[in-house]
Image (tube, rainbow, N blue to C red; front, side, top):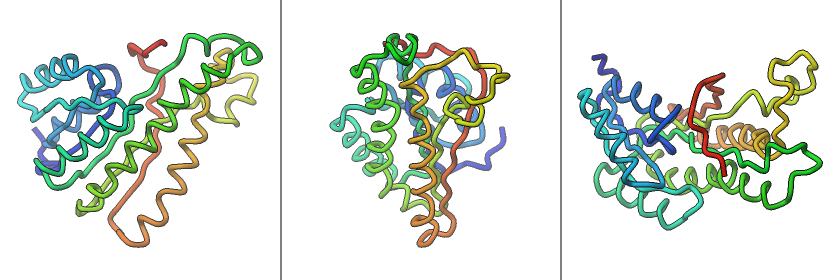
Length: 210
């Protein structure tokens, strides 16, 4: 096992399955302590148990990105147990069933519901955990995005996913802008701090549908 992340603490939202779980597995296999953040603590613990069977230091925490109480509780728990956070991966996200309609038929509640998780949730979790990230020698924030949020790709009639016109889900440019604006002030005071915006690409997942 490569241990280049030994001593690092990483929290991944929505990590009990799918892309979040795989990110946790890979960070853990490199020596990091991974915190499996999920709304359902039982499912989070099941995921952590599977990782521990592979000699990964994995622990579950209950965190719902739209519930400030769980966000604050997680922040306090990390502060108490580790005193810092080295890596935050904002992975949790949803595609609402109502978002599968043509954009002209999507209702306002679908937009609000999706934005609450995919945009405001990222902001709330990052804001709460930023003080702990600043205590790391080289803090990292990783925000997951998608090519579906690209204006350039969506305007290309030959884009392979041109038929996927999810109005609410493609609010991802808001996360892109947040990532870009967040970075400069942090870099000016913490030279080793980094923020990343990544797209995982096409992957088979159990995307939440609500």
